Image: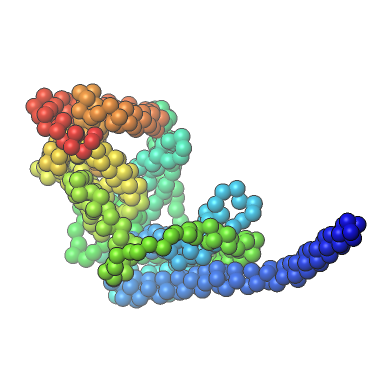
Length: 571
């Protein structure tokens, strides 16, 4: 009996093993059969869900933006924005928005095996570049193809064509003896090592004979290392001016094929400022013509070829990148969390709210205890938008543009424009200057306003800001704009509160270390970038000291109120 039972058990096990092996073979066969089907399906899915929508959006963006510019800027001329915005600023911003808003949920499901980190950055950069480059070239092509070269008998006939841009005139003769020049300098700090570059722009305007307020524009540009010795920079500056003047005097106008009438741009603004320095008066607005020696048709053909080539190359790179990616189905499954079912109270249905409005509502709710900081931030943003519409460049405005919209200068104070002491606090020189100021203002106001209170915080902001502006203008002969002086003064107040132990031990350590790091970064960056201008360092240190003095006065007179506010907010 025992032998029979053992044999039956072995037979049973062998049967199970054979069944298991057969089942495994069937699974492997099914897996091999389904593998190519999944690959084909995944390629079709990636094309349908990612590439084709991106291709359609790119074509639609280029066509719609081109049509919008042609209607508003060229045909109707009702929105005369700076050409830099049309040619670069808006296309770049539009490309980023299109990829971020519409394509992000699609390429977020794709992963690259060779990417060590998240694959989203690779898709984002590739898609933005693939869209922005042909969009930029298309705007350059449109700004030329939308116009034609108008042949006129005299320069005064150009005024009969206000919406045209290119003109061909027979015999023209500029009066070089009456030319007027203007030199504009700008310091730009960039790079990880805070490289400081001095840009020099030399503008020359020359009146034409037998023309009423029509000028020939010529410009020359160069750049130097701003950290060099002052004597070296002076020699470089003199050599550049002499060389540019010689090139202008030796210029031959016989090679000019046509003239380009300048529209709203930074160069046109500089030329108009140069013309305003002359003593000539006219009832007609000034026109600035720039000579062009290139064949018009050749430049159009080149832009057309480059535009289509860049579009197909960019789309091809996106296509290959999408094909090389895998669909991440596990990411979707991993994000699903099994939660136990609970009885929930009925919730009232609300209208759908966009993400932008949600973020704004959250911003206002989170800043109920910091209304002064929020008001100052919104005032800076509103002032910046207003100054842009007044003609200031949004990226890298010139000092002349900043001063014209409310910046503080010695000449303005001598002219009795004392209101600039306050307005200059909210005028910023470009979008990066504004972003850095708002970040620093929020960082200092996030905690300091809770202790000081809104009224004292606003008072301290204006006292520190006005003092820094007056100090910079009178003692260091600087053109003042922005909230940096006021913010450094507020840092001085915060340092005083830390020293007098207004904050608890935890916040003294955190806040004190944070302020020390920020001040070290500011000091080192100023020293590296402006090594030949140490007066800036002295100016910022004096602004910091006046904030510390003001903080000592506040602690001596209102210490109990400050302690009460700090304990109320657990600071």
